[in-house]
Length: 168
Image (cartoon, rainbow, N blue to C red; front, side, top):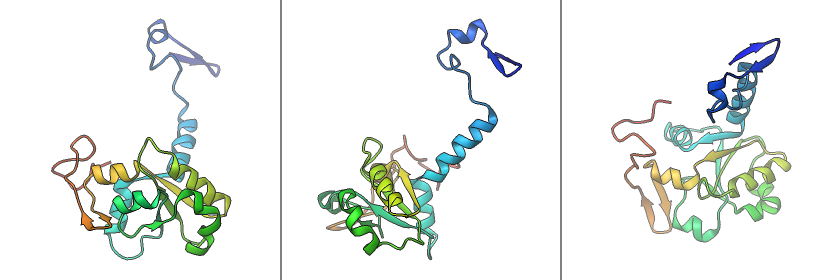
C-alpha cells in the first residue's frame, strides 16, 4: 500500500486481507480520534488507581443502575443515581465543577452512556468508565454490597495475576 498524491493505493495482497481492506487512518486522524476517545472514556483500572491514591481524586463516580443492582454491588464511594432520574436529580446531588465518571453493568449495557449524555446535556463534565461494574469485579477491585464489602480474585483474562496493574 502506498500513498501517491494523497490517494491510497492498495496492493493486491491487502485487497484480500480484511484488516487492510480499508487503509488505516493517517497519524493525524488517529491522534484526533484516540485523543477524543480518552476525553470521553476511562477504564476501571485507572479509576481504581485514582481512588486508591487517597485524597480527592478530582472526580465523582456515578452508578447509573437500578437500586437492586446497586444493592448487589457497587464501586466504593460511588453516588447512586439511576439513568432515568438524572434529569430531575443530578443538579441536586452533583457539583457541576467536579467531573463525573459514569458506569453501569458492563460492556453490554449502555446505561452509563445514556447517563453521561443526560449529564452533559445538563452542563456536567463527564466520562464513561469502560467495562462498568462487571470489569470492576473481574479485575479484582473491592466493591460494596448491602451486606458489606466484598472482593473477588482477578480474572486472569482481564487483569494480571501477579502484578499491581497491566502496565498500559
